[in-house]
Amino acid sequence: MSANSAVSMLPNPPGPMALPIIGNLHQLRDPTAPHIAISKVARRYGDVVRFRLGSVPMVVLSHPEVIREACAKDELSERWLSDTLSTLSPASGLIFAEPNDDWRELSKFTQAEMFGNSEVAMLGREHFIPTIDQTLDRLAEAGAPEPMRQVLFASAFNLTFRSLFGWHQTESDEFNELKDELLARVAWFESAVSAPAPADVFPQLRFLRRGMIRESAAQRDRRDQLIGWFIESVARRRAADPQSASCWVDVMLDREEEGKLRREVTRALCMDMLGAVPSGVGAAVSWVMLLVGNRPAVQTRIHEELDRAVGRNERPTEDHRADLPYTLACVAESLRHRTVAPTGIPHIAHADTEVAGFRIDAGTRVVMNSWAIHHDPRFWDAPDEFIPDRFLPQPDGAPSSALTNPGYIPFGVGNRRCTGDRFAVSAIWLHTVRILHRFRLDIPDGGPLSEDEVWGLSTAPKPYKLLLSPRE
Picture 1: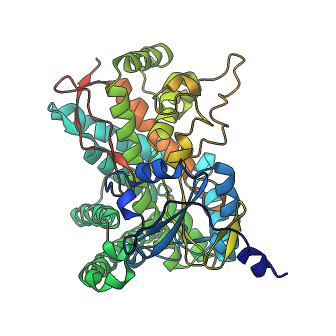
Picture 2 (picture 1 turned 120 degrees about the vertical axis):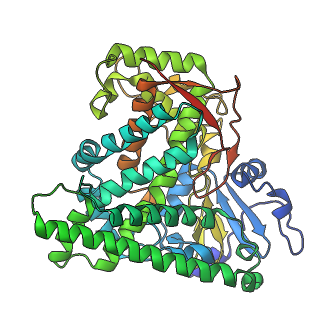
């Protein structure tokens, strides 16, 4: 019996009965938190569950080992992209490209030369801390409560921008104007790909998206022009001052000169970072601030730890991580409790295949449900509660078992795991400790604030404001 014949004999995954035309959309109708709606239905059927979204088949995987099995299969290696996302996103970078030999070499390059421990530490010294401190100065001057997601998205964009293109005191007005325009284009990207589209579940309605696709193409073309301009600005700076401060584009231009990287790939990697980091880091730090701000006892414990380990006259850095175990535990628990990428980017089966003994038909969208795993009592005690202590080191000093828990996957698993996880954790950590070292978080009306989730490119809290009072 051939492999294809063997797969065809396997059962379909279990799942709820689908209605004509709409499929299971009526069971997944919460537009603000579809990952929670999917998880509630999936719990009744197991770790591999079949749905139908309109006319589109979908399978949801809700166990880390099942996800690892799926990610190892060539038939499931491709991302599924909506019409808008496929128009906006380059296929030559890391996030959306097909994982072929060129992609694997590019992944090795970024991990070794862009996201290694020493490279991230350099970025922290050169770019992260100055950018974050500029954000803190703005918050200190504001006085009134600030819309935290908006402030932190902009801060994460500036941090990513500086890491990519560097920064100098002598930047021109044109440079700063184009940077502001690029921020606006990146924000448009986030809102556009987060918006639900009927054509994604009813492909016959694609004609309704023509105007959006034209606008997406125009946004993409201008965005790529801007990124190209900033890449050239780095090249001009290199020519004028070969000893200028290093940034990611410097590293990529070195590889271009060696014939190991094409300009198209350099531009795509820049867009990967600008598209993913501001959204993900901004959402993650927003969650930490909200969860801590809603829990005065947790905040007091963090402040006491900061005062004891860092003091008031010094500022916390990466070097203080080991000295701040409770603060680090709060960050780790926040990444679990409110998963920023709860279902990641769906994959699509380009051929019939098997996962966990079930048949996955070609054309099926496959969703890796991290949110369900992070809230699964098989892996976590009291999974719906915010309990930072679960991530504290063990009494003998060994790392918490929660960090090695197979159910802890805030950055995904397998060959599509987030390549820039070290960068993201460093950015989240430095935002968290430098904000909480400098400020006390107060809820303007006494609170508590809502901790409901809002679906998007990165799942964030509902918009909220905090009053940040200087601790001095």
